Amino acid sequence: MTRMTVGFVGLGAMGQGMAASLVRAGHRVRVWNRSPQPVAALAEQGAEVADGLPEVFAADVVVSMLASDDIVDQLLLDPALLAGATASVHMNMATVSPELTDRAEDLHREHGIGYVATPVIGRPPVAAAGELNILAAGDPALLERVEPLLAAMGRHTWNFGERPRAALIAKISVNFLLACAIEATAEACTLADANGVRPADLVELLTGTLFPGPVYGGYGPMVAERRYEPAGFRLPLGLKDVTLALSTGAAANVALPFGSVLRDTFLDALAHGDADKDWAVITDVSRRRAGLPT
Picture (cartoon, rainbow, N blue to C red):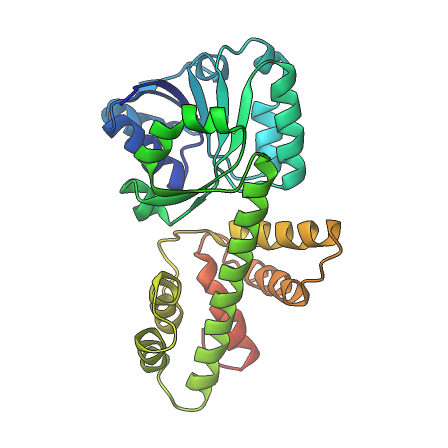
């Protein structure tokens, strides 16, 4: 297997496990993060500590896992940074907007750097195990070049073609559907609880019959037990992805009526101080509306 020098930016709950997977696979990994604690933890596992972003972009490949368009724009789309880079390709593995993806692709091309989109499906334990599903799009030659990195971080790579934005549209669609599933489960459990049926019993029925699989099997017990900590995917990130779905839909004249309901539900949860909890905490919004304790 080809071993590479990798610059890794963004060591949040997902990024830490992804970077660790690259270290375990034998790649030389230089890590950079705005807060120092994750950097120190990765250094103990064998990663190198980058002095700054220019050193990250001096690696063979840059991998970024940053939380939002604004942060990517602020940190990584600096023309001066890209002008001095020697990296051959940048893999953006976070969920950002198609518009930012187009702009990032163009800006990287101007500076002779390849750009591919490789957002992921999976929660932090899946990332730590190197078992993510990866949605990839971009120049086929670039994707072939970074395949050893994808193999180290994921169990399967799903190819969505040559336009990086396609991988983001697919990922935004996935997260929108996932948010809908959590909300539907929350409403069903609230309906059951308000009428004397234990939510845990309902979830056991659903996951054992109509809805087996990781979504309902993973989130169903969290909803039924109202277990929102530790957060595998924080509430503000869920709101970001629902908002991305709405804006992506609007750009293509696609109405997403339930998306507006979800957005308001997420805002309700944020207004009640739930920002640091898992996005399954929208269950409590449904319960408050029904007059049930939270």
